[in-house]
Image 1 (cartoon, helix red, strand yellow):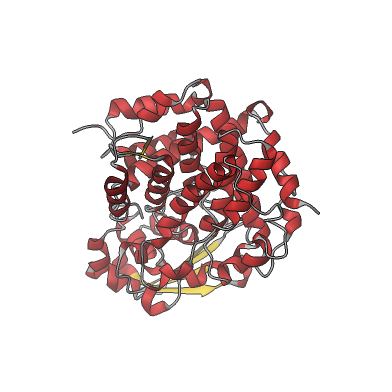
Image 2 (cartoon, one colour):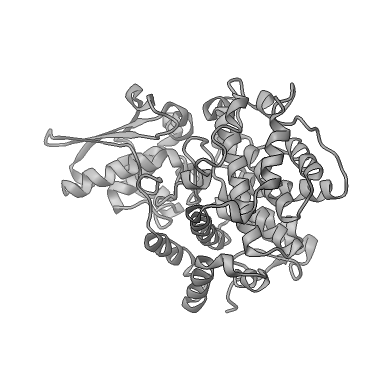
Amino acid sequence: MEVTKDLIQRCHDLNYDALPADVVDRVKYLVLDFIGVAARGALSESSGPVQRLILNSDGGREGAMVIGTQLKANPSYAALANGTAAHSLELDDVVNEASLHPAVAIMPAALAAAHISGCSAKELIAAIATGYEVMIKLGVALDPAAHYARGFHPTGTCGTMGAAITAAKILKLNQKAMLNALGIAGSQAAGSMEFLSDGAFTKRLHPGWAAHSGIMAALLARENFTGPGTIIEGRFGFLHAYSSASKSGKVLQDWGDPWEVLHTSIKPHACCRYNQGPIDGILKIVRENNLDASQIEKVTLGILKAGFAIVAEPQEQKSNPKSVVDAQFSMPFGAAVAILCGKATLDEYTPEQIKSSPVRELMGKISCVMDPELETEFPKKWPASVTVLTKDGKSYSTRIDFPKGDPENPLTWDELIDKFRNLVSPVFSDVKQNEIIERVRSLEKEADLKGFLMLLLKDRS
């Protein structure tokens, strides 16, 4: 079975007119979410080094937009910066079944390639939908748990492949060159989960590097550099090298029926996807029963097996985060701030909260367990269970099957716009916010994206 070649033909042949109206609307929805997280992420501590790299090596005055800054850069550097910034907040979109974050790899590559090619918004939308399809299908085919077990971060690995296809479509590569671009990307796909050991910034780099690599793969292919034509299914190809449980048949299964962009979740809480359901459950119990931290004796959280080593183990480390990255991947921290603050937004994931005595005391009362009943429909569902025991002996329990933001429990356009405004208020004026929202909602009407892309630069003080 020639999976790679069949995939490339489908990607090459897809155009905007083939996309249903709900897919076009969803792409625009995801574009607005991405702009919000990228603009606010540009202010993150981890974004500073990338921006300085651009200034020191590229000048920062000409080229593609670095969202939320006044920098412009070589498109491959802009993709690196935008992807890294957008992933820094842990508020970017996510796909449950593939356990990855598509926007932060696909969108930076799309915008950088658009700067190079001068494409229309319709071409941009079609390329984004295609990139999502490739990235997510590969994530599902790898088997996320098996991929994690080998120490890989699916956003970085699958993201490189999806970004290459996205860029290749926008650059209008022919089928042969697109095949080469994907083959080249296969030698760049990377992303180590070792950041979990000490809270390093490298997880945030993974989608930025994926977008950067995707652009480079497409540009190399445009110059007739070659890549293996069996990069997906080959003996040493992506599926065999990166997973012990991959299934190549899933790559093309149900292609575009429905489109994978429709399976994408939006995060309301500023932390790992595996923490979203438990936090929803905690907030539900606390609000419905008017509980506060002083009343709570113990909280037991049922966590999916695939995420246990990411957010719950080692227990001592997860209950003693040292950095914001540590906190983003600590279930005890997320649970504690949700109880104490009634939310788990960017305002809670701070060095001050990490050092807070009430937070640290409450983390000691949080217990995480693997609940076999949660596994029956994983990864299509990412359920969580929560039990809160109070000091007066009362017990409250709930199960969350679809956390807020999942396709089955989505944020409305109005809720997404609220999220966008909250994120970008330190970066864009109200006037600019309104213009970005308006133009994204009618994005397909943009024949030339240059004016729209200029909007993504930070307001001058």
